[in-house]
Amino acid sequence: MKIAVLNGSPKVGNTAAMVNAFADGAKEAGHEVEILHVGKMKIGGCIACEYCHTKGEGKCVQKDDMEKVMPAYKDADMVVFASPIYYFDVTAQLSAAIQRVYAIGKPAKASKAALLLSSASPNPYDGAIATYKSILAFTGIEDAGIITAAGSENGSEAKMAEIRSFAKAL
Figure 1 (cartoon, helix red, strand yellow):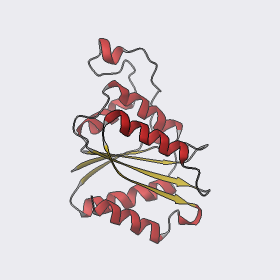
Figure 2: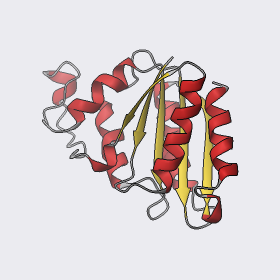
Figure 3: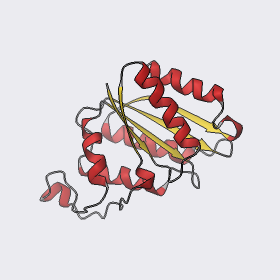
């Protein structure tokens, strides 16, 4: 299975550790994993021009780093969204990438998705989970699972083992 991981963190830290643990477990199970560091890319939010649905044939009028993300997103059998929590939701960078996949809607092959969230505080996840569930409802993609890490769970061997085990079982 081809898995595209959209890492929305602009830093290397707890979310990166979660993504790496996921990738390790998935690769051990024989899956192909591509990590896209959307948190460090230059991706503008959707400007609602509808070029993608009128003249663009699924291509956005904006020319930015989303052109690096879209091929992996289109070809993925599974999409994983990963983000630290910034003010009760995913990062603005991941949100922009999510908005921009509107150009094609559901990826052609993806049948599963997962969500990895990191936070310093316990239970600030409602906004991010609502965003994720909205994506699933719109695309018809099955939820493979949501894993959160709060406070001291971040980077802990127990949490990393849980994530590797989750990815291995896909």
